[in-house]
Length: 125
Length: 125
DNA sequence: CTACCTGCAAAAGGTTTGCATAGCC
DNA sequence: GGCTATGCAAACCTTTTGCAGGTAG
Image (tube, rainbow over all chains, first blue to last red):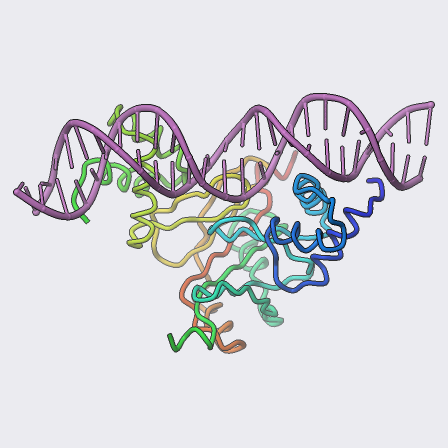
């Protein structure tokens, strides 16, 4: 993969923003620094970066996929009230992949855990 | 919600098929019994059934969403080799939602756990 | 009879792709 | 210089929606 300032910017944007942006948001943030960047380039690079395991794609089932710059194991909590997506540290005493491998004949490579609920602010409403 | 033979058929199709079909597959299966059913009706009913919690939507991030007729807690293992989606029974001794609620201030309502890996047949290849 | 549901087709997202040009190595 | 990446726009695919007619209650 050849170097490009567009891809570097996209990667930085995702890594330095804990907001788990969708493609369009990445595009808008990137455009602040590189006004000519195109949406096609953003999509192409999101795909390339995901395939190279430099970022991760999060399937949220309501609208567009989100992108996450964290590669270590953790999971996501999505507030059904305000839409915010938060990282949660995994339980260091419990390994879900091991559980799955012990109970099936699969070799697990990747886990996505998404929980939906209400954050403290939205619980009152 | 008023009764309709289209919706009943769609619900039956999903409940009696452990394949976690996407919308188009539901449409094709339903068309065998009701050749005039339209794709729009399938989508409308998948949405209605999901919103009434009679089926569940599974976000798999590669292509279309899948639908699941099982409502009890369980998780999904997707084979990256052959694309098969399998149900896995949850660990009855460990409650991930409780863990999340204990470590955040969220009230968790729904959990989606998707693991990707290789089934026994695809591990050899 | 009224409100909801259907089939059809068009529209609306979101994402990918073809092409000519620009930029890295 | 060659090969990859970009910008732009068109194409693509999935899902939603407007409309006129049909059906359940």
